[in-house]
Image (cartoon, rainbow, N blue to C red; front, side, top):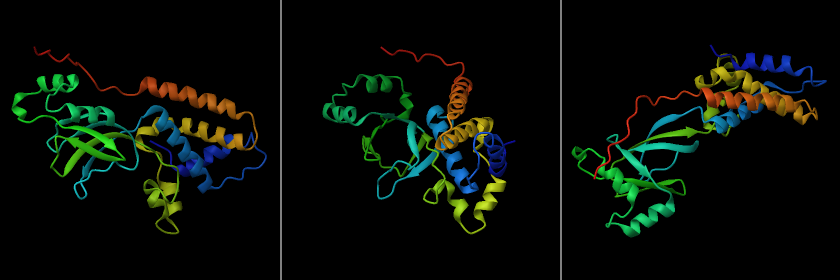
Length: 237
């Protein structure tokens, strides 16, 4: 069971009082520090993933605003789309219809013939998805690594904390870290304490930074891997 943010704030105060003469951090300030810790941990480990269905607006698919890295994109029928960078995509457009792009040709040869159509290529320019061949359906399925934003009224991730005067206290005392992060609460506290006492000129911040880095390494080592009993695709000649 995860702790509530208010309980983590109490832990923060207990663990920090040995390093600073006067603790001048409010619950809101604590949330700013603590959310930065989660943000950094997510960047370091990519522990949290999201699956979303994107709907085209005026025929355009735009990247989610919290996207760090795309894992995969599938069309409306659940078929994988093949990612290319903009230069690679442009080169393919110039070479088509000769289909001289080896990776694409190899993928096509391994597809079930019952699919009946070629896979789409996609790239992203200016946060907008571009497809080839033309993609006419209105949805795509995107699996990606999201950003954890810093605590702010400007962030949609924290919108429930700013709906009214009592919203902060309600969220602070009844919610905690995302479920994927339950095991790493102390890691976030270590980062938060380190950053806070660093601003106070206390050199002991290095101890907490070291503990945080150790936790990051451990998190990467124990990150769940779900690929099991895989077989190498047959090579078609």
